[in-house]
Image (cartoon, rainbow, N blue to C red):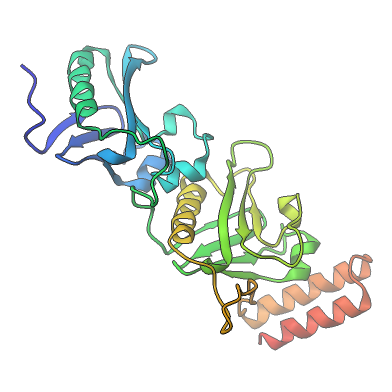
Length: 299
């Protein structure tokens, strides 16, 4: 006879993860084995409150398996909001894959979990119900290094990958209060990128991420899902709990970007690169002089 979920701590183990059923939530612990998806390893464990689950399904899987799926409620989990449906089934943290012989046990837990879900009011919650990955976080994109300390996002450009538009703009730092959201496009598809969406901007953001100083672009081996998606989710959660920055007279302040201090060798490399852009006609004399002065001021 199956165990009763009235007792906390019942565990259902599958491939790559184990679900522990508690009175008000499901604690998902991911394995760290070599075959476990890297995203699962990066997440470690996640607690999913019952109120963050919209439905529970059980369906046949591949090669003699069944899949228990806790369908997340829209707007409840910043990770799934950032992913926006782009995760492959094998990397979906809400799917537990089990051997087919455990189908009866899985069906029992699915029924028990369904019975504990609160009524769906039809709308998204007013806050995230599942905790986001904690800052500080960072990852390497193709054209720069992205870092987040919990209060601001910084992009430090790589001279080997960044476009001339980004070199002109310089390294960027965005306060969370200046952002309205993020746009994450998986590195596993064409033109993958992470773009910061600003509350107020004097000019429209460029359509192409490689021309936008508020975005970093991915590429083969750069910005992998297990690094860039938790980063995006953490930023998104911080943005949602933050209000717009206000000036002393109550007006929404414009976003502020600031250069990141570099070491002398790095500054010298950047000045050489600026000289190459200037000689190629991509920078005017005034642009080259101004940018060179800004770099020298960082020393």
